[in-house]
Structures are given as structure tokens and as C-alpha cells.
Image 1 (cartoon, rainbow, N blue to C red):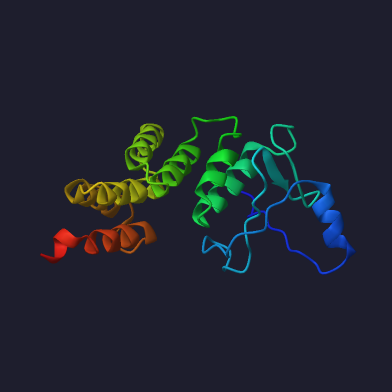
Image 2 (image 1 turned 180 degrees about the horizontal axis):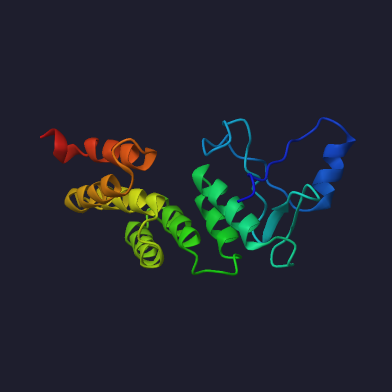
Length: 185
């Protein structure tokens, strides 16, 4: 996958030209996802996506970006906390049956409070790729959010079988389970 699309505002005439090139919304907080935390995902207005080549938001669906680029932007927005923007971008990915697209559609929905809907997307993703570590982690976290710690532990066991107890997904789900109030009683 291509690296995260980013943009920076410059205190010069170039910034004015950037804003005139297409509708932009200010970038979000630094994302912790995979880039050292020093870059920010670009958040364009609904119906627009960020084009790294032109350094501007362009009308979505114009065929300028491929599925990989659309997915990367949607994933980065979701991980940065812009869940609705992530869903908007991910809806433009042509292959809506890709397990990673389904995973991040589920993630954004879950984070928006639509836990059951998120879980349903995770199940679709796992039907395509039952070994997707991210989907297993997020499904377990969805179960925690739904109060089904027993099912979350089942996902933790599946992660252990797939990647051991030292992989990030196992550790994150284990932490989410450990934080559930029922575990403290």
C-alpha cells in the first residue's frame, strides 16, 4: 500500500493557491497509525478526496485515485478519529468486498456508536479473510463494547493461535478486555 497522503499548510502564497484548488477542511490531529505520528491525514469536504499528485482535494469518483489510495485515506481518517469522513471516503472504493475496506467500514461504524453494524462488517471481512489480524482485534473490541467479553476472549484466543501473544493486535485486545468493569469485580 502507498504511504499515507498528507499535506502541510505553508505561510505563503502557495497556501492560498492550495485552498483555491479545491475544497479543503483543516487536517486532523496527528495519527498514531504507522507513520511516526508526524503526519496528518487530509480531511476534504464530503464528495472530495485528497490527491497527493496535485496536493489538493478533488471531486471523488473522477477516477483520479485508485482503490489503494482511497482505502489508505479512509483508513487514516478512521484511525485519526474522523469516522464519518472515513466512511465517506471508503464508500468511493470500487471493491466494496475487500476485507480491509470492510474492516475499516466496521471500525468507523463501531467508533460512531453503531457497534452492531460494525460487528456485522467485521463478520463480512472475516468471511473473506479469516486470518485478518486487524479484523479479529477490532471484532474483539466490538464485543467488549457490546458487553460480550466471552466472545472477545474467543477472538483473543484466535489471535493467539494466529500470531502469538506478542503481536500488537493480541496486546491491544488483551488490554481492552482487561479494562472491562466485569473483569474487576
